[in-house]
Image (spheres, helix red, strand yellow):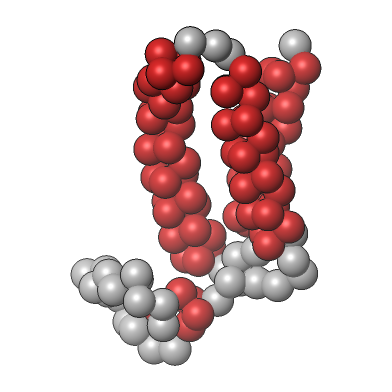
Length: 110
């Protein structure tokens, strides 16, 4: 039950932070699609990683270390996401990973 409450709260917090850190609706959509795309890919690999780690070690204690590492990564990401700042389209446009063409029929005036 505690695990379910923690996961539900984390999911709701993640979606809330996306909206709070976005300057406008377009930025919120871009952040949301990036975050959910990456997160679902990581989540899909989770059961396989747990099974492989358990098979290699033969015990569940190694998984405790894995979960601690994942928790520390979530803590670091959460501290960065909790900073009092907004993501702007200019910052996202200038990043090397965002080279999407403009939508058809859109005016690209910034």
